Amino acid sequence: MTERQERRRFIRVPFETEIVVRNLETGKEIRSLRSKDISLKGIYCFTSQPFPSGTPCSIDLRLTGSSSMLWLHIEGQVVRKDASGMAISFDSMDIDVFIHLKNILYYNSGDPDRIDQEIKAL
Image 1 (cartoon, rainbow, N blue to C red):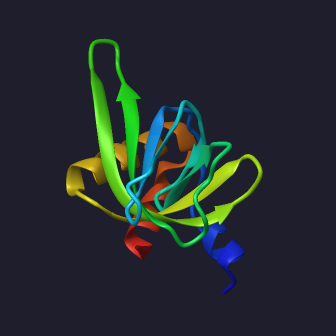
Image 2: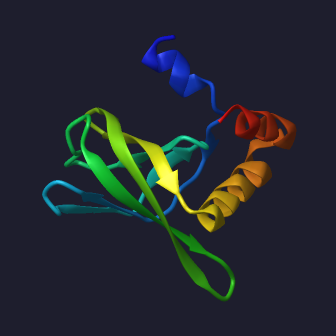
Image 3: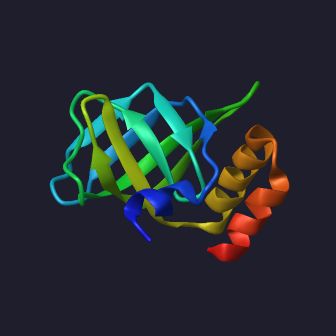
């Protein structure tokens, strides 16, 4: 299976949020006010200074509600970069973060049954 086919196995939903990406090798940090979409396995982040493909990184996603704010912390790596930003694959997250991510996808995908199938395939 090619990398492109692997990425397409997971439903992507539009998801715009503030994101902070830290290069785990250099400590450099990129703050972006916009992400494009998210799936169970990754996120696309708009930035004019993307890290190179293969860069291990930590990702912090900002979630806001009517009365609170929450940061989700995820470990991953850059899998692709282009002129607009970078695609980051998720490698690990704690269970609470996974539940938040799952709920984001449930509510925005229109197909929670497919999300359940994707979770079983992980």
